[in-house]
Length: 105
Image 1 (cartoon, rainbow, N blue to C red):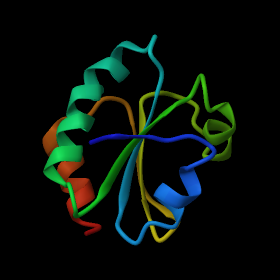
Image 2: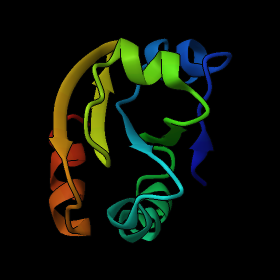
Image 3: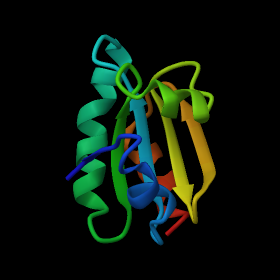
Image 4: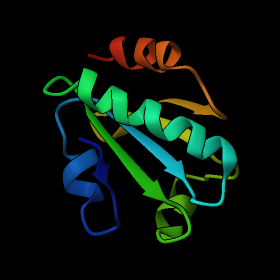
């Protein structure tokens, strides 16, 4: 299941997580974001127990978007040990994202 990430739970769910976490920075009005949404949901199921997967709505969480310098969406960021270890901008295939996440497990 994909986590809805907010300023309130970001530290606990992402930064303090021992597993890698894929974070999708998105917005409801963004076409490519809507294309990536089902892929992110599928990755959450595929990596259940091995990695976290969450989404940050940049319209609702502009502080988080600013903190991680999100200029274009979708931006997908992989965090490990509280640090950004991968960052891709734009829609990607499920296979590409799975491979990125896999190398940090």
